[in-house]
Image 1 (cartoon, rainbow, N blue to C red):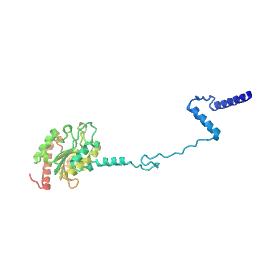
Image 2 (cartoon, rainbow, N blue to C red):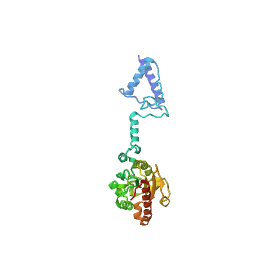
Image 3 (cartoon, rainbow, N blue to C red):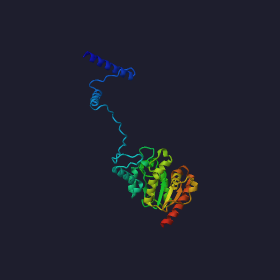
Image 4 (spheres, rainbow, N blue to C red):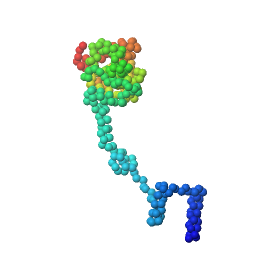
Length: 288
């Protein structure tokens, strides 16, 4: 019996020495008897005694399941959207300016359109004002401080001067429709940035389509260059009508705010608006 114990102890000692050698001379720490590791190791020992030595096979790589179809997603395959997401995309597209059937609907769409905002926080939508069936539409570049406060284009000193210009050719503000390229105020009255104009134009184009004017008067360089998609200076754009879209004719003149800074341009503006009134009467058959 003692001999068996000695052999068992010698065997355990050799096993310990071998483990220490494999472990860089450090004795492998003994797990706590009640630890999960101890429990799993004892279970595996019992299984090995019963069924012989075994190895746990490596699991093959399984493609991830598509969240929409429940089938493996193939590499490079475009994922299909769930029905709810598809409906959301349709709603977003229907909320675009092309979906508006009236100026009232377009106004509501513009209210919710983040694309129309500038980098100035908490600005008010300045949509447009005037006769929704006007044959003449006036388009400026962007709202200023007073326009932002009142939610209406061309108010303040520039708006008062515009009213006088219109009255000089027998128009009331209520006879025409007035809007801007941008529908939110940019900071410090700076010119609209190219990306701001690009984002705003689809909404303005839809506004023009709904009003269906015969004539457009561009007020200022930015408005004219944007709608005509040109970089030509004012001197090359004034004094003649430009074909625009769907038979609409477009004329360019100075912005009223520019006239306040440079009164010498008022004579040129007077010539422009007289030309405008003459063409308006020809197209509409009206007389003053």
